[in-house]
Image 1: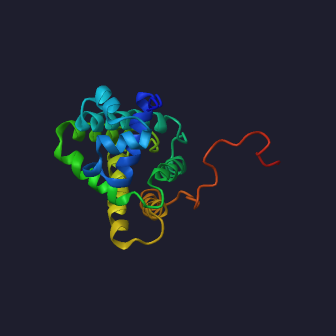
Image 2: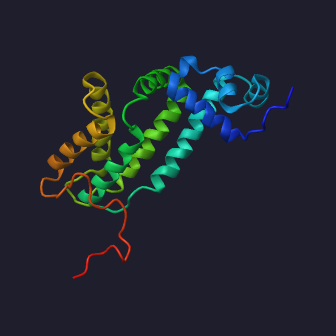
Image 3: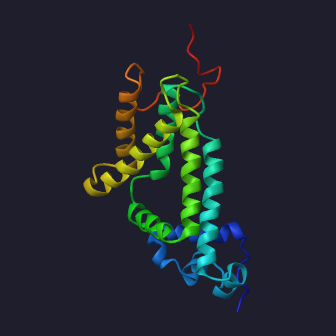
Length: 207
């Protein structure tokens, strides 16, 4: 019998995440992850001990991936910068094919204190990134606006789960744009934002 192909711990965690997104936490088994990554069940157990440890490691990696992803997002301060960031943030939602599995994962996280703490850490990272882009104004509370916009994202996601109108990412973007238009009525929030990254010299229009 050929020896199983060696895979890194990160590869195993990515395989577990793929299973999680496809089937939800209840059907995340060592055997299914082993099949996904091309290792034996014994090899997975040797590295991660059991299903619970594997799931916790997946969520820990999700926190670090969130940190890295947010660091690569459009920067700037102001209503337009906030809209560009919000628009790009919705990319992770995709068309909505993972919605059911994500809801089951959120329910599972709510039952486990360790997983709930990791979920809270991701939440605070996203809120901090939103707050960093809120216009600096004595009348504005960046943290409060960040929590509000995060609530719009969460609420719109669940609303989409009921209505199933269009793509999930586009649905949430529309709600975010409406919320930002109320918060910053004078801002020109293009749909989609005309610039998600700084233009290179060649791309800048001539005067």
